[in-house]
Length: 496
Ligand SMILES: *[C@@H]1O[C@H](CO)[C@@H](O)[C@H](O)[C@H]1NC(C)=O
Ligand SMILES: *[C@@H]1O[C@H](CO)[C@@H](O)[C@H](O)[C@H]1NC(C)=O
Ligand SMILES: *[C@@H]1O[C@H](CO)[C@@H](O)[C@H](O)[C@H]1NC(C)=O
Ligand SMILES: [Ca+2]
Image 1 (tube, helix red, strand yellow):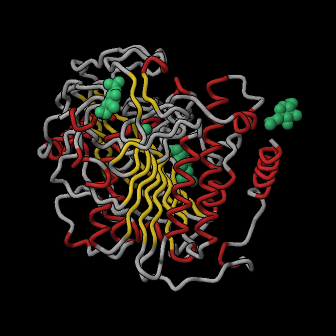
Image 2 (cartoon, protein in one colour):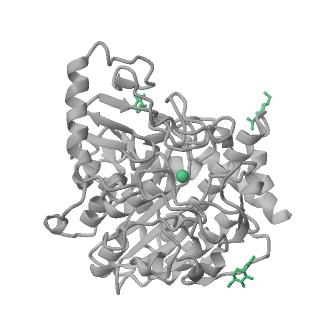
Image 3 (cartoon, helix red, strand yellow):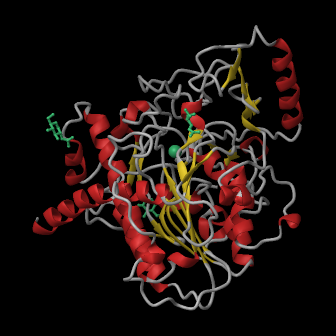
């Protein structure tokens, strides 16, 4: 108990300190002995799960994220960075550089019992980095295919995996059980989901998943030998995704929050922040900060029915509005960024991280073919400009029959903007309307909250953008939507 109190008084002090200008890590006179470094930077990619636009300290001062604030304010804040509206497609785009409609992942996520996955022939980021001599680790949530051994992280480029294979699980029991969420679902059964590499890692000590991922990350950092190789550490946390669970002291940080869901959710955001602080401390302690690039993103917008908020943006997790697709994020690196402490206005899409990270790793961009992403590294470093002027939000001609595209300041949405079957407010399954023929056009520069549909005023712009969508849809493949199979994930081999 005493140590918890100590921890939290320290946490409050950090919160205060985070608002005071401090020296960069390089000026810190307690800088540890610097190990000889490899010529290529370590890359730490931290992914939050369902953290909304209004759920970080730099967008909303009521959110207590001192470590994230510090890193963001001393790095480059990404203010025009986009992802897919849900977990699996977003993670697939980030780790392959391809739009989900070219992977068959444009519809919803990979269900807990669904044999659905990133196509086997698609090269993934960790494989490419490993070829470049990187040590590659993932601790956290995979959610890119789990129905057979050749789809899990250690078969897709990672030297080590510690975490969960599916979309979520109880933070303390590590069991996925839909009845816990009160969400009606076609998925039945409850099963355990926590792994070390290819093996079930059974842990029934009541520890909190966020802490487990963090402790593993710290161990990986402490064990890493920079003289031998650079490191890619992928940290896809499950926070603040449901179920709403957090150790009480973090909830106590929001005693004035009257919405109990929001209170717990914000506690989860602060516990995530606390974890990021521990990871950064480990990087500093090992003398790695001078040779590391940290990238922080959320995989999609906040889910309002589980405490998230995307205000002032319109929409929610699982839809094509800005609230579902505009991600919070930053890049921090005292060594490699040209501009620091700035807000980057450049347009970035999830598919850009694959070539951008390979660019940081010194990979020749010319040999990357058949991807949709472009390296944004030079633009992020200068905190201005972009390698793109347009991107696809999604194209689903198979299940939802909807699409959305961005060109310059304009955004076109065709059909039902939701891509999930659950109503975000009531949690009840509300089938997508594939016959919805609505056309919506917005100027996001003058109307970032998508309030004023310009479609009837600007028919030429609508036609131009529909033409562009047709070009992108040429490479589309059918949406994978297989029926559910065995619910017992620990018996993975029986599934396919
Ligand atoms: C960042 O994005 C928000 C939301 O779209 C926008 O309102 C704001 O003006 C942007 N800030 C900067 C500095 O560009
Ligand atoms: C909660 O509200 C009280 C009364 O307005 C205020 O004194 C206190 O500082 C607030 N606490 C937090 C954590 O915001
Ligand atoms: C799930 O599969 C594992 C491994 O085959 C087995 O030990 C366990 O009993 C199964 N659980 C259920 C609920 O069938
Ligand atoms: Ca998510």
